[in-house]
Amino acid sequence: MQKQDRPAHKSKMRPRIRRFFMLLVVATLLYFISFIATAHFTGLQDTAEPSEVIIVLGSGLRKDGRPGPALTRRTKHAADLWQEGIAPLVLCTGGQSEYYPRTEAAACLEILLAAGLPADAILMEERSRSTEENAIFSKRMLDDRRLSRVVLVSDSYHMLRAGWLFRVQGIQSVASPVKSNRIRDPRVYPVSLVREFIAFNWQLFKEIFNIPWTHVRGI
Image (cartoon, rainbow, N blue to C red; front, side, top):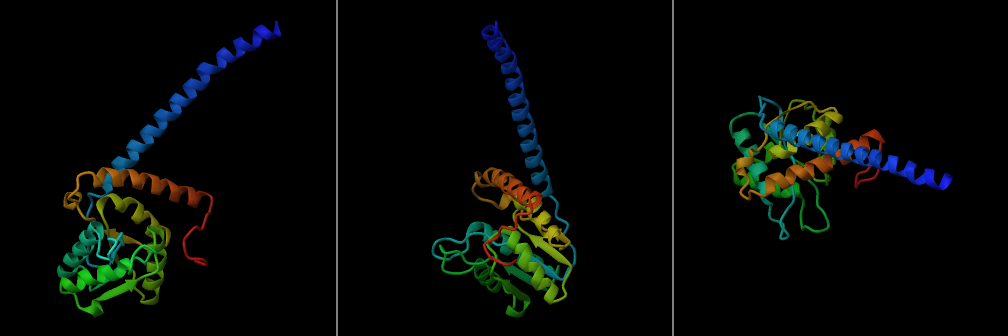
């Protein structure tokens, strides 16, 4: 009798397991869709107002050290804001990885100077290698100069996570995202939203379990 009961018990468990995994898949899909929608609509909101500093979030360079398309459009947008008188200073962020000959901030500086900004209007943060570190090191520079009113500039798909990470560091900022229609390759925006989903949840995992994982020790 025991041998007959075991298969019956297993047959009852299988539908429950299938239902559980189906519910898990549906819940994950709904969470993914809600995140993508939130990130998209957050990136549509430009709340820029007169401030003390415009912060440009770094992005990758080309192999020869030239600024990549994301960094170029972010920096040019920041230059336009400066020309409009939104803030007297621009803070370029982004360090140097082993794959590139200079820092992202240095490439940002080059674009700003070419756009007509004077050197004394530009601040440089050249240690960070992630958005989290952008926020950490920017906070130190802002505190040293007693600056608090900030306009955050990045691509629209990046603004949800960036705004969160800067708030975690105690930086209350307004946002001026680069519009998605300035991205020439139509594949970049959807792929970037998916990457943001992964990066956001990795950061959430770090926050929940208090994992201080950055590339620089002691921060």
